[in-house]
Structure formats: C-alpha cells, structure tokens
Length: 240
Image (cartoon, rainbow, N blue to C red; front, top):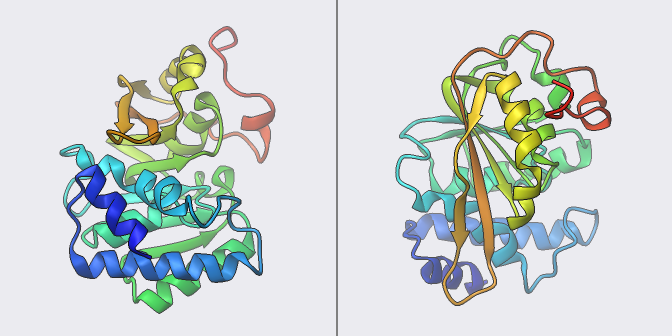
C-alpha cells in the first residue's frame, strides 16, 4: 500500500500523513469490494497512479478548490475523483452522485469506515438531480472523470454549478478533438471553456488534462434534458 504515498511524493503533492492513511484504507476497501462487484477494471498494480493520483493532481493548481468549497462528483463510479479529494481536503463538502445502487453501497461503506463527515452519497442520475431545487446551481464545483465527451459533460455538470463557479473535467489529450462542440455546448449552458491544464507527472506516463468551464450565467431551464437524451443527442456546434 506504499504505492499511493510514493506517487504523491513523485508528483510533489503534500498531504497530511493521517489523510494518506485514509487513502490507503480506501484503496484496501476498493480491492476487497472489487472482488465481489465490478467497481474498476484497472489492475491492482495501476490503481494508485491511475485512480488515486489522477484524482488528486489538480490540487497542485492554486485556487482551483477554494477553502470550504462544495463539489459534486457526477458519475463518480467507485468514487473518483470526489472521494480522494474529500479525504485530502476535509474542509470541502463533497457530494458523490452515482446512478448504480451497488456502487453507492460501496461508497457509503467507505465513508462510514473512514468516518468521513464531509461526504454525501446520492443514488440518482445527473439528468434528474440537476433539475432538483436543492442541487440545481448549488455547487461551487462540479466534476467528472472518464464519463463522457466534453459536450455531453457540459449538460451533465453545468446545471449543478453556481454562477461564478466552475465545472472540471478530467480528460485525455484527445480532448482537443472534442473542443469545438464542447465550447458550443458550454456557451449554451452559460459557461466558457478555459485552456486545458496539463496534469502530467515528470518521468512517468501519467499525462491527462483538466478542462475547466467557468460559469458566467444561469443555465436555461430546458437543461439538462430528459434521461438519456444528452448522450443520444449531444449538443453540437452546428446544431445549437
């Protein structure tokens, strides 16, 4: 379990020792539960870098997560990136949104065993929760990792974000192929794309980018559209 600590050191991330211990416990629970249900296909050897480090790399960017900010992780799956961020930054309140009940059961078990009081788990779809009054435009940050193309993520994430807040998308370098439609979708939902932030670790193959969308006005009430529609008929530059 020393892998997580070694990767954090390699990336230049300074995290309190107690929180590293919690990340290691989370890792152990993920390995245990993954034998009983499909939580991740990433190998045991690659989990520390591909899940934990990848989730935490944006903490190197000053001001990206203001003190005490609220974050919703949409389509969190086994808890990435929201749960490592909640562990590393206990000042933040993190909501984990996941459509699959069995995964929510796992996430709730992790939160209980680690005593995480700054995490809420919700079993629902983004298209439904994004229309609910107590979640719509209530978060400083909305995040997604390895969920969908950029234009679809705009419709999943931006309805949750307050004016003046941001959506954050963990993407691979190929996101540039999604940029034109993503830019148009973001604008339609009241936001603008910022230049992609490189999330690389020197001397390793870890190389992702973070796309930040800054929200400048309220999202129109017709978004998000009904369940499944954002993925079936994604917003595109030539159709908006």
